[in-house]
Image 1: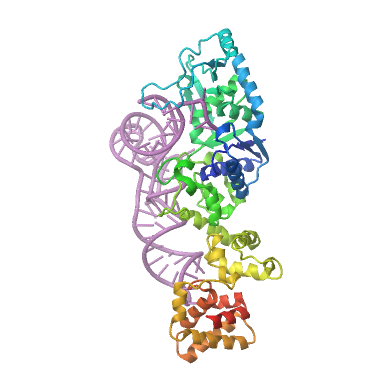
Image 2 (image 1 turned 90 degrees about the vertical axis):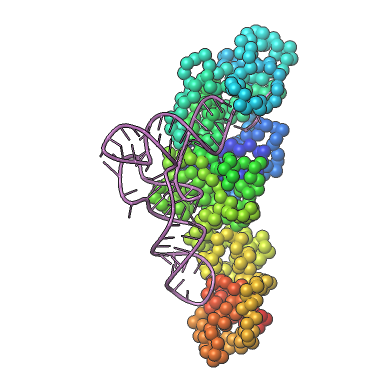
Amino acid sequence: MVRVRFAPSPTGFLHIGGARTYVFNWLFARSEGGQVLLRVDDTDVGRNTEASLRSIMDGLAWLDLPWDERHFQSERRPLHVQAAEALLASGNAYRDFTKDVGPREEVGAGTPWLYNPGMREITAEESARRASAGEPFVVRFRVPRELPGGVAFRDLVLRKQFRRYADIEDFALLRSNGQPTYHLASSVDDRDLRITHVIRGQDHLANTFKHILLLKGLGSAAPRFGHLPLLLGPDGSKLSKRRHGALVSVSNYREMGFLPVGFVNYLSLLGWSPKDNREVLAIDAMLAAFRIENVLRTNATVRFGRGKQASDVDPKAVWLNGQHLRKMPIEELVPHVEGALRSAGLWTDDLGGSRKEWFHAALADLRSRMNLLSDFRTRCRAYFSDDFDVQGKARANLAKDGVRAMLRTLADRLELVGTFDEATVEAEIRGLAAELGVKAGLLINGSRAALTGQPVGPSAFRVFTILGRDRAVRRLRAA
RNA sequence: GGCGCUAUCGUCUAAGGGUUAGGACAGGGCCCUCUCAAGGCUCAGAUCGGGGUUCGAAUCCCCGUAGCGCUACCA
């Protein structure tokens, strides 16, 4: 049984790179009939925040790709400590009494740091004595650097990987305060939670050699690994919360009005493709086409459009969302639009009841012009409320010679016609235009402006029937 | 500095020895048309550089170069 995990640390909001990692894990596991676990890697107690955890959970839930289990790493701490002690006992780890010097920032200083001198040689007896005497220490893994070989594994994405023991540093397992490090906690949990495949960013590649070593020291088999290419910001650097801020926050996309499937589709295409020129993919289509070995090895740039606005995301993402918006069954779209309308106070319960059919029909007419859910509460406002602004160009259309008077005449006539359908409305408008000797466009565009406050939108005749006779006539007169 | 990963239109990508190097977004044009979209058609636009191997290289190898990652008692 395939079991994957997504392991965010709650030290910031969910960003687009994390979301993509989740999407790839999910697609891989589900396409293999496997399970998806969520593991909150909260070992760095000092940096964890409740707000961050909430942001991550909300963001993942919004993606609508459900997980099977959720675990908190902090709750598993005894297991981690136990593993560290086992490694210490077997000689695969040792105590390092060097005092903490903080981050080593001397990059470019020549030889890389691999271990602190003198510490590997301390005998077990002396080590135990100093520890019980209260001397602070960190527990490090003893990399068998005296051996000629190295760690080899076959990556699901990058294929054959190898690193010499001599190039792997003696990484920490336990901090001097007794807290497990990420390496220890993550590896031990992967084992205990029976994770079969670890799919994570390429920034973890160097860690993987350590984790394989660690697991081997524990006498356990390592899972399979797949390292995803990184997502780069427009400036070319790895996407990060710190550098790219709200621009890469998943909540930004949600607030802009992305459909979960539109957003997931966009993410799925960053570093992967079904190889047959299809791009607009529903979840089941992604599932059917997904192959982890088809994931690219090259980093992808996330575009933010030309401007610097948070709303100015990759135009292709918006396009993809629009494709889903107009291709998905209306019934599936409805709850999303409902949410958008609710947030603007435009939702009334009859839209789900007595006027449900009308609502669905209106969406069918409107959605080809929309790309984001938010468009329904802005550009479509006049269809759901009598309280709407008249845009500049629409105002200009109404201000043209005698247009307002003509619209009132039109209102009078439409009030009297027998059936109120598109053909009738068109006949009345064209007839009136002919009588008055003006171009039909004058009345058509004027009508749209009066009815919707906008210079653009669906066929003006259609707008009449969407709004219905009463509202249409009222708005013509009020223009 | 050390250790790695990578390199195709502006961007996302297809082609894993043989194609006029394909598609999509964005951009230009045309059609449709009451507007705006949608849709259809179309134009422009790329194999980082240099060496090999081969009848033949975007594809395999090497060297450069560039970008990115890692190089913590962060994850």
